[in-house]
Image 1 (cartoon, helix red, strand yellow):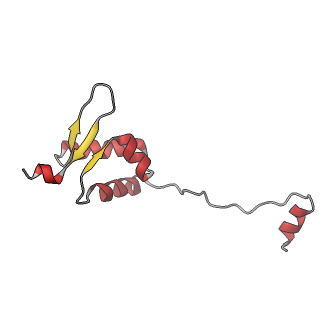
Image 2 (tube, rainbow, N blue to C red; image 1 turned 180 degrees about the vertical axis):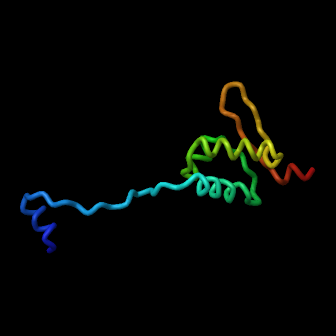
Image 3 (cartoon, one colour; image 1 turned 30 degrees about the horizontal axis):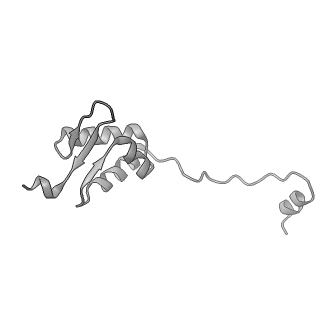
Length: 97
């Protein structure tokens, strides 16, 4: 056994090596890239900012900003509801009609 393990097993305190965080900190550009890659697929999209942020593990405000920008650009449709968060949709099969 290593010296650190021996000290710990003998009741002594061993300084544990510093481990990197489980989920490393990502930049805003990384979060935006992940969102764009997810939304560029061929399949239909129907997301709220909260669901998108949770699904991809990105910052909520970044998810909201990207969805708003895509809605303003006409790539997604913004559905406004009075009692729940806005939803952003794209249904390619319906859009072709």
